[in-house]
Image (cartoon, rainbow, N blue to C red; front, side, top):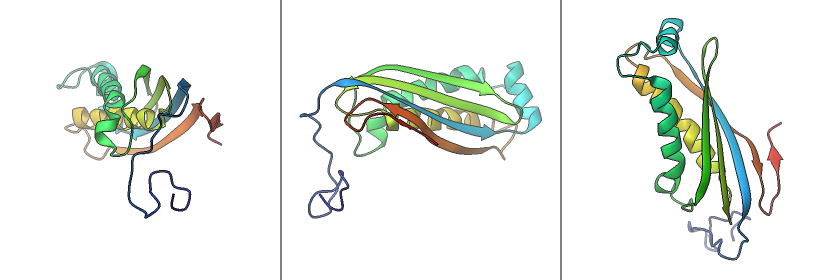
Length: 157
């Protein structure tokens, strides 16, 4: 390994880590992110008045689908048997908070799946509401916590 980075071989070339020797244990990751939206566009989303349809329902399904497709999007991620994805979308005073909880029982964690779910849900909100507000801002995407696995539990400070 080069510098302790597991996705690099001894020569510094990218590789997919072999997790076959790791025990399949229960793992969970929670991630969040926000999209800031103009008041009139946010009210249209809240009222279900966006011409493209139910923004929150579509974004929720998109985020769940994205979690399941993470290995297709992030080159060195393993395809995982995800045991559950929950994606909450909360309308706040200036935008929408997306929170994804992803679980598996496998030899590697689901942090990337939770982060991908949040990111795609927020991008979907942007896509569906861009006719109302092209100035929406996506940000604060981060891992809140992970549980299970060899490295144990972790929570954001």
